[in-house]
Length: 263
Image (tube, rainbow, N blue to C red):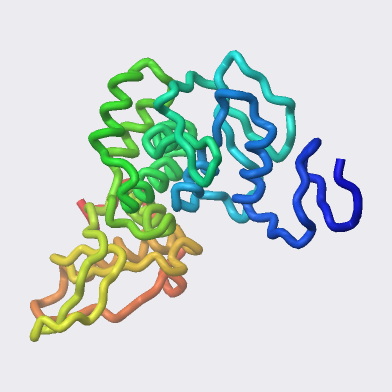
């Protein structure tokens, strides 16, 4: 046992210097020292170590995967998932046992909420850590595992060009409201082909462009704004433009069903 003001106890027999930054990675290092053989970091903790931050807020709760024959002492800082864990599902990152990118995403897309499942798929595809083909192949190999219907839907809705979780959530918001599929990372150029901007989502044929910044603060207004804008664009004569608008200025009345504005 280490004594003195220079050390901070994290777990039994696990200490860290008082000046060390207690971020999620440090907690992962501490948790690994308590894990039995065959266990590994998984879920959002594994994703973070692969360079994809899917943590809810600044969560310090570490996600681990455990073979079903093992048991871990309950601790509020550790979330264990007991599962079948093949040897090929585990590798090492910075000396820590971690589920592979394929297994990490396979678990996240099955266990998370629908929206967060799509966020995870988008993020890991964007970083080229996995491919849709390898994810689908794993689903076929484990076709009786729970959550596969959601995983397949997340794959169907995936957009590898999405650059942030907020972009993914915005795209799902508009998709679920019945809007047409939007082009991701649309490039806007002037008549001389000079780059003007690149926007998160667009309907180029409707001259409609949308960014994720701030719009999720007003989800109902966002859907209403896009629907109203599409309706207005259909009424315009060639060359006419609609004024720029933001969700904060749109009606808060939610869209009911699939509006005729975007059928």
